[in-house]
Image (cartoon, rainbow, N blue to C red; front, side, top):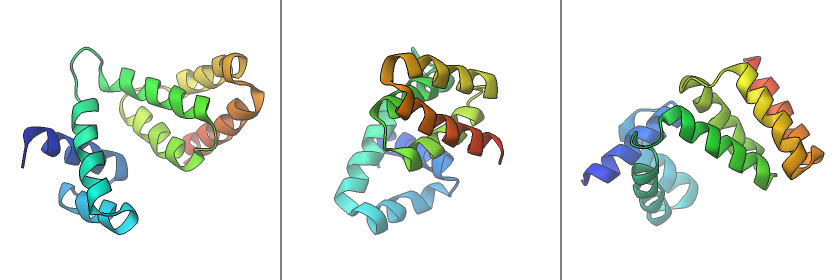
Length: 121
């Protein structure tokens, strides 16, 4: 098992709230083994601390998911993870408000609902 793959397992275990040993099986059950291997390797390259902190990466991913729209289940998980990485509730709400200007009110308002629901948990 490569170091990159191991970092990917660690990242997804943290995001999904499961043990690292369960990540590959989760992907296989939901998306197939091949997709899972690619996703785990990709996360191992994307979710490490080098030039960007995990907090910074979380902000970027939350913003990207809001901009795409229609990805509320994915956004929900990344909002929870952003909070774990130190993004404050006020910062999440500020991101949503800022993006309303750039991606449109409908996408931002849906994201705002997700953010508020997750903050209320």
